[in-house]
Length: 277
Image (cartoon, rainbow, N blue to C red; front, side, top):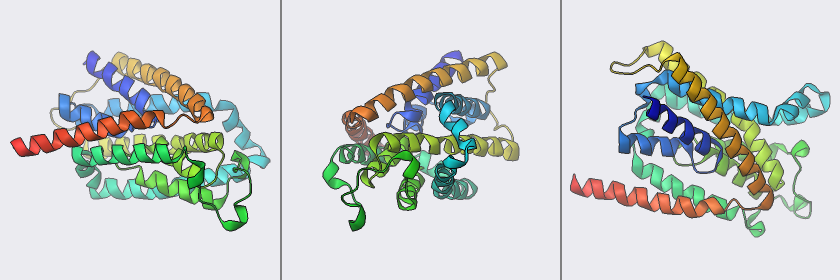
């Protein structure tokens, strides 16, 4: 159980913020090694809490600024940007379609390839799409992000519910391509991650309350959960810090090479299994 916790905590911490899709990697690991979300739903909630703690600490000063009146516009945009993914997430959870999506490696492989392509597109200024009246304006700073840009980023986060389609990679790329300043797109994406991660943990908790502990599941002990929380938080903080540096340098496309490789590998593996079956 300890090894299981360490592996999942590290994967959660690395993949939650790096643009490589934590959901896709956890699903593939589950298929390859027999890990299951049902093995410990409580542990899943704790690992999400670790990532949430990391982002709250990392952006503590910025979040405190929301208490000031001049930050109301940014707070409103974060709320609006959260709505599409929130509605879609609840709908999928209630319908049970989320389990069907997470169980299909072929979909994950395809989404890896889509994420890789979006990351490469975000590095090409010529692909930025803005209204004619804004064509000559500099990239939008964080404090002046528009409703149009917010909706584009919010809808992209909704699609990122698909396993393998990185939430951070998709939203940052969407922000940059809609005309938002590169660093601002990264910060706004991570601000959206707070309700997104918190919402995911809440839905897991709701499932645990509604359906109880699945038969055959294993509950992690309090010390094991504590280690999982701290390890997830520490790795998440490191990944977040590194990614913000790469965003400033315009190096997001580095991750596309790995995702192209992973996407092709997963698709070929899934097809090989289907042929043998």
